[in-house]
Length: 169
Length: 140
Image 1 (cartoon, rainbow over the protein chains, first blue to last red):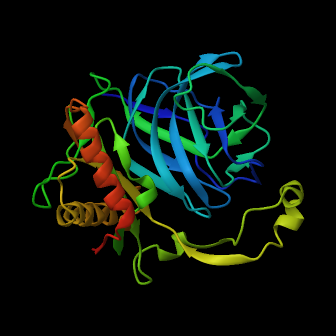
Image 2 (tube, one colour):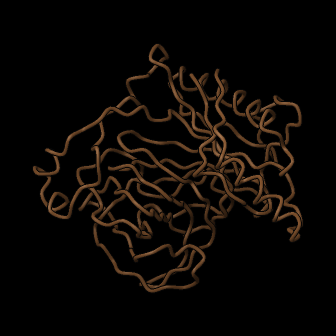
């Protein structure tokens, strides 16, 4: 297994995204492996609701979502970390997010930019997006190159505590 | 420290009940000040978005954010007691990493996704709705 990462990085940046109910595809740091994204880090500028995090593929202005997980409400003001995810990713994919409400920590320069479109585009098929050049957005994912994409990772614990923390092969 | 099921992060996911645990620190826990922060009390207006100096004048409120969040995926007949037992165990594991200045990253065990029949989907949705309607909390 090798480590995969994707996205700009979740840090406290100098600006905020100016619109909500928006899907953004982060062109910074595309995925460097094929496997699963199992954790993500998000940093919002104002409290968010209806947040989703996932992966997109495509080129030019046309992108398609590959996989997504519903995150829910995300508090602002500090980096929020999430584990236990199971998001399919392939080499070259881009991190993506959607929020119903709330703004993200955002840098206006120094990056590769992101593509954006109003409304939730996860599961919407190929869409044509608008480029916001040079920007970075505080989203980030990590995972591993694992065979058998799509295998579900669950905890089945009929009576409370079983052994936790063991990784799969 | 304490853990809560976050209803907005609970849903049907690949035939399983997705549950999100939000893990919080108490005032005397390690690193409490890292996630007890001041945030704008409301969303910015368009004018404030365009003018950071104006945005800085929006009143702030104190907010205790989770120090970590973890997702699990369980069968629809998993009881609330079982769910919170799992949550409290993950809370202890995550806090051990947090208190060692590591980013918590607990892992789930593998499981083959179930066949999603209509009956199963209804059972999963019913459990998800129950989780959205119920306050589930535990302590570490």
